[in-house]
Length: 307
Image 1: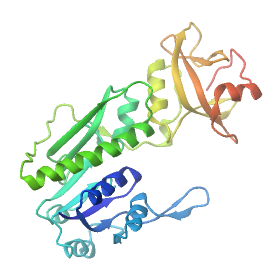
Image 2: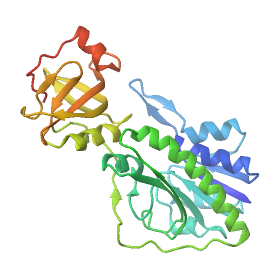
Image 3: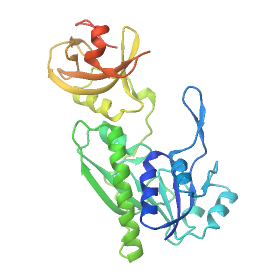
Image 4: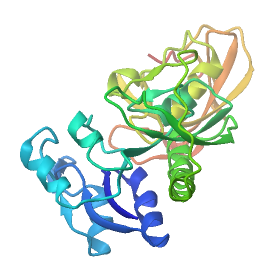
């Protein structure tokens, strides 16, 4: 098939590479403009652009898809379908209806659950025991179009948002491959999304990072997992921010929530009468390290209350 591919972050890269491996012709790659990154604000290309250029594919980076120029640029390709994977912007109706195959999207959740920007992370934050990907036909809503195929995988209580992100990126590529195979065979049957179970996965931001020790240990553990590697859960020790990367649920305790009850391991009382053990952390001006290593040089006294 002759395809236009639209995507931006590293989640979309396996799907683009799978299309090429399957022998499809990707005549144009559309991605968001390069953006300044890091403290030095270095102008950095999106992961999809880097991948496309490595395969010598033409790249188009419009500031908006709602212009006549953008529409005409896509229309001149005369593609069979448009593939959209984490592009990051809602497409206008004119683009949705541009090709015979429509716009086929790979979404990182089991729709209708977790429509929106951060489905992978919220599945972990909410402690879900299952996650997956869905291919769908885009419409004018936010991830509300008819579903095509799904793939799910079980989750344990140790997987992080970043680890699940990588797994679902590969799952999505595989599901996209099967979706296009069935599309060419004429065996796809779009299914409208049910209203029951629908919810929205808002984008994460740093205001969600602070750990509220009055919450149950398992809730905080899931928060830590879901926000690893970004934006990273945190608390304060002696007024300084301590990022928390890896935790596990500890033993029962009668201590006030937020109180350090042990140093080896670093265990903190939570609101449900259990402790949360911090295994990896990072404080201001230091690197990420095992909590045991940090405490050798920077002991946190038992009885200290973390903010």
